Image (cartoon, rainbow, N blue to C red; front, side, top):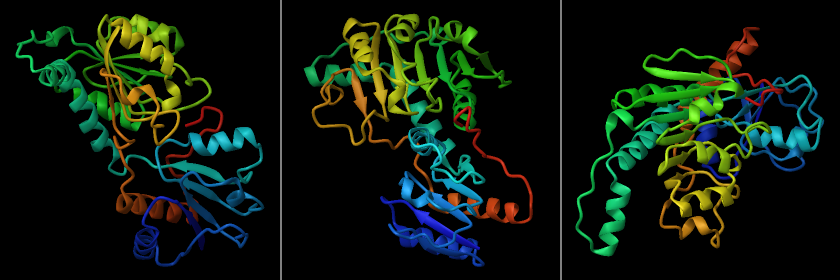
Length: 313
């Protein structure tokens, strides 16, 4: 069993050690340009097209993250990039859900208790108590109810705020009012005080966070984007913040990463920037999951996490 590994910005030796421990029967090598030797599986993050070329025997590509938009984008631009018989498999949780819950909970509490505004008052040297937001009307909408989104929605119910969720198909989550399908999208947005985006990035969802969507939220609402930067129309977000339709945006993902130094998000008083850290891939947990799935495939068993190319997740 031969596996090629590619991730430019990581401790490659640590990944190889973990694979040697969890999957000792495998020969795992780091892919380098020009490597066309046989491989049964690929474990990658933002791999170049060359890695996939001329690999008709590749059985599966494991993506080191929950979002597979980078690979699918290459395939859309250059059809035939991915080997025709290879399944694309995304990570499922591997510790990311807990991190995402922490990030989302912090954001909701920060806005509900108005700590963002108290930070601004401190910078101005101003002592002023602000009335708290009413918990019963501080509606939080979770946009996207996949593995991570569903866990975030469940966790927020415990804060005692109204929680809504939106997904492509109906879901049943205790304590969460679920809206499904395009025909219910506006109803999901209407009057929400916080919008947390956890959608997959597909051609259908690109630019979904735009002026029209912001306008349906409650006046003075808050945005938390932990999915992908291209979901947001940046100019529309800045306009909504400047007009007061949105009070604050907490952004972890951007069209270009790292966020360019001249981007207005860096300097906007109502924008908080974090460098794509809301839910990082945990190495040991990821290796355990990938190893288990490779063994299952070797036994001829079905696995979860296989990406539907038409849906994009």
